[in-house]
Image 1 (spheres, protein in one colour):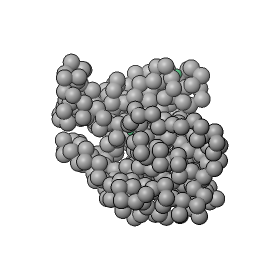
Image 2: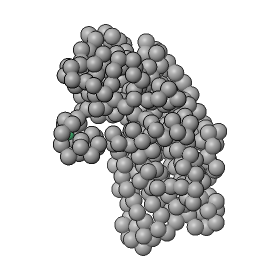
Image 3: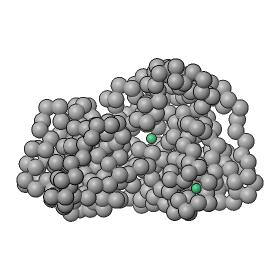
Image 4: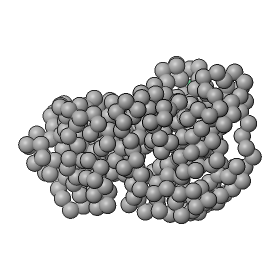
Length: 339
Ligand SMILES: [Zn+2]
Ligand SMILES: [Zn+2]
């Protein structure tokens, strides 16, 4: 099998690996679609010196495909099933795993480091991670569920947005754009904000009610104007930037709720006095639980929602170098490898 490996300093190599064999309880999935994520880019840009002695590991953590082979004891999935694969392998027995929060397990292992990821022909995982998708959910949608779309869904479930809500989405990369689509599907009035015009335009195109370019407009003033001076009911923060976080909090109404999923700046961005006086509720959110992986697949099937409008580029993995160069520009919607 072939897989994409990072060499550091924005260089990648397509390398041959032995095909994985499933052990007890394990499943090998033949990849059909897998997205490039912002967190892959952090590693792609890393200094080559830091990666020099690392064991070559296939990158990527948004797996979706067809079950190829199953190990002994596997009963719930079978060869030929269409599955999306939850983000982390884990022990399966601790209380976090029991609740479906595989990402909280002390033995959590993310695809793409420390274990082989999804930018390869085959992926080795556990039976519990495989969520069978009905035919109406595409492989590309399955890849979105595994990370970008799932991260957006999990945050919006915490915010409980509905037809009564005005929702600001700060940062319109693939996660923010997913939040725009899901926010609309939940019935909210959605305001998208970014500083890159291509992404502002994309948000408008996929159905954001309002889209603001923070490079040319005053974000807080604009949101106040749109909401009759009140501010937004809910904030989904996906920019990970200090200005994005500050503007997002400032543009919430009194008693508003915000969820933060964008990682990036280390700068201090919280003013607790402001949170007290305006009675804000602010939460963190990190990928999604196994339970919500099931819920999102069902939601996509029931509502016939697809993340397809966010997908702007597809590549074969042999063109991994070009795919990452394009993603590195941060001007596109989602970029995915497809087979
Ligand atoms: Zn991701
Ligand atoms: Zn565990």
